Amino acid sequence: MCGAMNKRLIPTATLATALLLAATGADAAADVAHILWKDLRPAAQAVAEDASLPMIAAKLPDHGETLSLNLQDKTIQLAGYALPVDRDGDLVYQFLLVPWTGACSHMPTPPPNQIVLVTPAHPYEMKEAYEPVAITGVLQPGLEKSQLFILDGVSIIQSGYTLRKAEVASVDTVPDAVTLPVNSPWSFLNKKKN
Image (cartoon, rainbow, N blue to C red; front, side):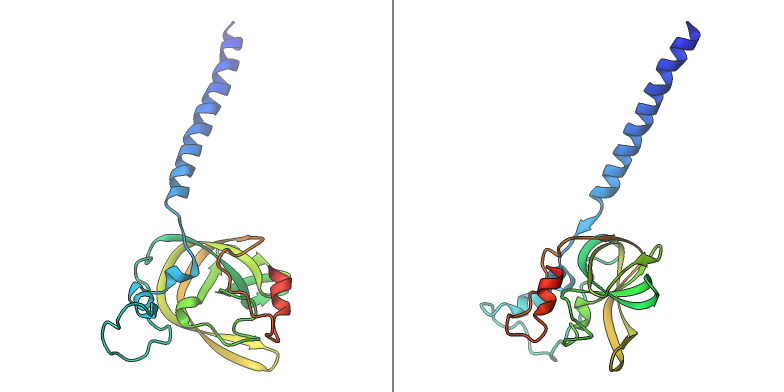
């Protein structure tokens, strides 16, 4: 009888532990802000871009160096395209996350507030550049420069945000990806990734 009683308690205890872990995981998932690329622009820049609103004040032109501080130290998830900066074969140790394919190497570089320098928690296996991925981790605003080795030399890319110890997952699509115009010489990248 005691043996039968213990067999019943073990599954109940296991179920209680699983429910506790599930509840904890749900709370952790609720703390992740799922953001889009537009969220990386500061609110003042978004207001200034709206043609229906009067300009707030004359100031020097902003070329994307102004960063959003609303997301500082918050755990975010953002989807984009990975462009390796530091790799060994298929293992990537650091990459730039950009909002469209071809950015930085085939096309003009996005402004710094539209580039995230990502260091994965574990090397990420990537077969090709511009693989669509989602990153999750704590976002830190701050301008950083990275050397990007491309076919015709080295390019220095300035990113506006960093995300260290990032969890990286492959995704099928990027919800707010910029699609290149059909007449662009790089429009073949649309077919490849979208």
